[in-house]
Amino acid sequence: MSGYRLSPLAAADLSDVWDYSARHWGFDQADRYVRTIRDACAALAAGRLHGQSAEHIRPGYRKQIVGRHLLFF
Image (tube, rainbow, N blue to C red; front, side, top):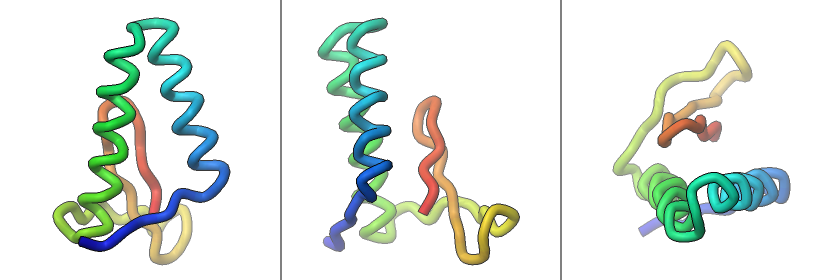
């Protein structure tokens, strides 16, 4: 399985997502949601997900919807 690396800004965003989710829906839901995002990152890195083109933003960019968020890679 291929790995992935989050940029420092992406890691900070993920932390903010957890904080917001925990405040509004509780710790368990925050853990589940962030795990879903991390699982999607792993699936993208392993080639199990491919995302959609986001060429309009930058050549070579792709995006993947996960819950209420977009992952750009």
